[in-house]
Amino acid sequence: MEVFLDTIEKIAEVYKALSDPTRLKLVRLLTESNFLCVNALTKKLGVSQSAVSQHLRVLRQAGLVQFYQFHQCADFTW
Image (cartoon, rainbow, N blue to C red):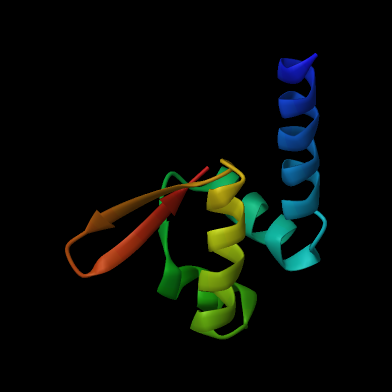
């Protein structure tokens, strides 16, 4: 029963992360590209870098995106 409850909580976290339109747009952009850095995502979405970073943090905590550091750019992937 405990494993079931953990699974339910994880599913709820994923749905919550995907409940925001900007985060859904981020996921769509990341599925269309192998990697995109925060600056590229900011330009494509037309929102501030801090907003993109906050949305990516939520998606990352839900296990929906991965973070990679390449040179001066923080890249994310689906």
